[in-house]
Amino acid sequence: MPLAFVLINAEIGSENAVLAELKKIENVKEANVVYGVYDIIAKVEADTMDKLKAMVTWRVRRLDKVRSTLTMIVVEGS
Image (cartoon, rainbow, N blue to C red; front, side, top):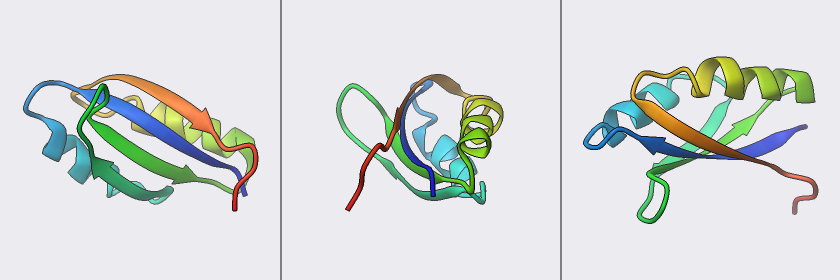
């Protein structure tokens, strides 16, 4: 099953609001606010690679107050 980790930069002060919206998305299996270059990391899973790409492009990246993302698609996992 295709899996990706999406690193998200949010507008200043909106991290918790973005986190709450992420958690409402069915394919987002986990999301956390983090310290560092990015504000939030989300674990996104889908049935196919096309669905995964669509989920990140049309749902995660389009959330209000998301400034930028970096998607890392998992090649091999544990």
